[in-house]
Every structure is written in C-alpha cells, then in structure tokens.
Length: 133
Image 1 (cartoon, helix red, strand yellow):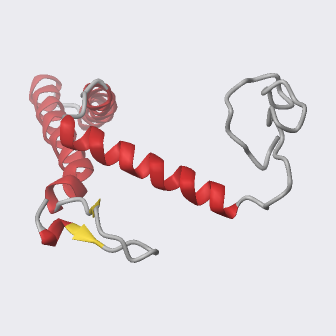
Image 2 (cartoon, one colour):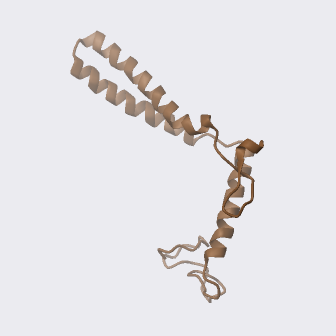
Image 3 (spheres, one colour):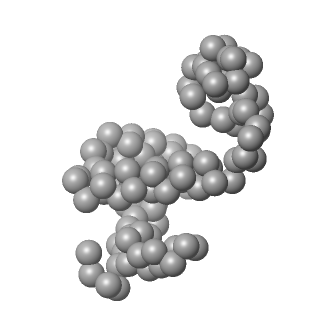
C-alpha cells in the first residue's frame, strides 16, 4: 500500500487503508446505472403508450428492480486477497479494542471462565459479548 492510502488510527499505528474515491463513489455509480436504465424503460413506455402516468409508474418499478438486482450482484462479489487482509486486520483491531474496553476482573456474560457454558442469555454460542445480553 502506498503511504497515501495509509493513515494512523487512534493508537498512532499505520496500516488501515482509506477507501479510494472510486470505492467511495461506488454506491452513487450503482444508483446512476439504475436511473439510466429506468429512464430508458420509462421513455420506451412513454413512446409506446403516450401516457405519462404509466411511463412514470414503469420508471419507478424499473428503478427499484434494477437497484435490487445490482445490489444482489454486489453482495455476491467476493473480495480479493488485499480486501480480505484488510477485513482481517479490522477484525483483529476491533477484538483487541473490545478486550481493552472490557472491565477488568469482571466476567462477561457467556464466558466459560465465569462458570457459564459459553452461551449467552439467548442460548446462542456466538462467543461475542454484547451489551444487549
């Protein structure tokens, strides 16, 4: 990673990657694609029926459908090795921050050391402490 993509976090360490402008504008890009495709559908319906209300209804329906389909494609995208490494690093930092923020000497709900079975109050064995338990 270049120094431009790295920024220090709260502890002064570098290594966290700031998203590029392309990553930041990706949601706007997807909404723009959905808008262009739905405008096309709306214009086709307007030329075929000459009813503006029907064209607007089809525009809205097409916009929602295209947006949902694009969202499903984005959710199905698998991250590459650099993104997986960045996600793993963020998870490690979050777990160490949680461990540092936890009150010392107090057992958390679901801790096996506290005599619990590792399951929270809801019976899940997620192993994560939550203030809602």
